Amino acid sequence: MVMRKAMQAMNHHSSLQPWPLRLHPGDDLRRSLEQAVAARGLQAAFVLAGIGSLAPALVRLAGAAEPLRLDGDLELLSLCGSVSPGGSHLHLSVAAADGRVTGGHAAYGCTVRTTA
Image 1: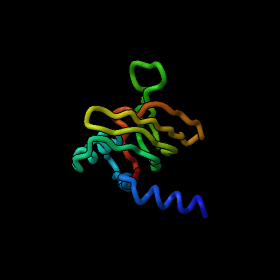
Image 2: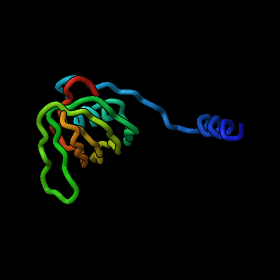
Image 3: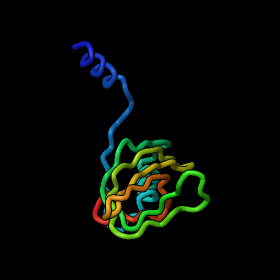
Image 4: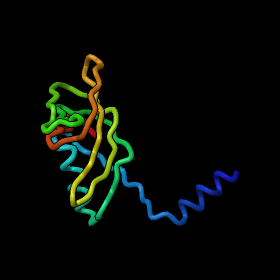
């Protein structure tokens, strides 16, 4: 009961507003998120979660100067990070058909396969 009241109080005074967003086949994942934030006139937004599928994905691994291109049908297992007009910092993990999982920074060129 105490937790429920605390959550209600937090929600009542919070400026946090959930904003579900669906991307479509052919959309560039990162660019589409940045354009959606700009279209709403927001200065900052963050992605709590994202799932879907990509083909291809461009993932910049830790310490790498250039992104790794992953071809084929990929399941988007997770997506989180910040989005703003000054730049985005998005992390993702994707799984290939053989179950191999790769994660890192979402680069431009991650193309939505079915939905995201």
